[in-house]
Length: 182
Image 1 (cartoon, rainbow, N blue to C red):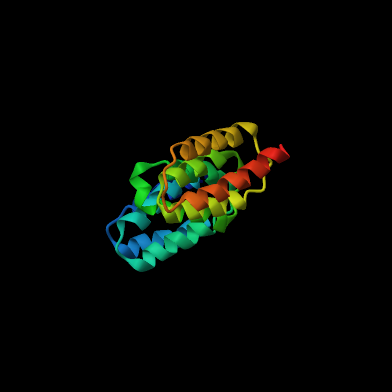
Image 2 (image 1 turned 90 degrees about the horizontal axis):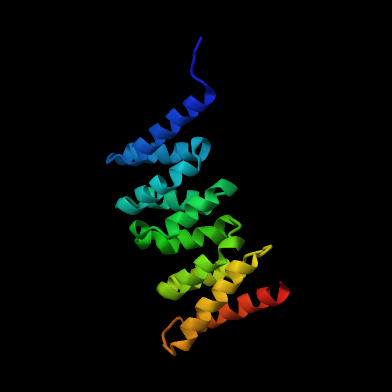
């Protein structure tokens, strides 16, 4: 009779998946990625992203993206927000942002994170953030909405003209409509 609890078995499976995702062997990484769909949890997310970021294997990258675009668990929300803010994942940020609207993760309480990324990021990151913000369903908390409006007001006060200006005006219009609904 085994003395290991189911939690210990789950922890061991998670550790094994993480080790395989961090491997230099593409076959082992691909095997781990396939196992993530059935055995993965939110602890795997940063390692999955790192596997996609650090490989030159396009099949591995596309499998990582497919998993991120298919996230359904609410438990994935916080690790995904943390990944957006992780400077080590900056090169993968556009994909991470897109994963929010593709997976339909409810990031309504993190609107300000997407506004900040839209302002700081490049054109494509801004476009992805706009798409996320336009697809947020709420309910919305006043704090992130107000913080978003303040950041956008500061951006437009600088009178900086760049390629993202029209996108950010769309972000502002969308958030004003949400604020009016509060």
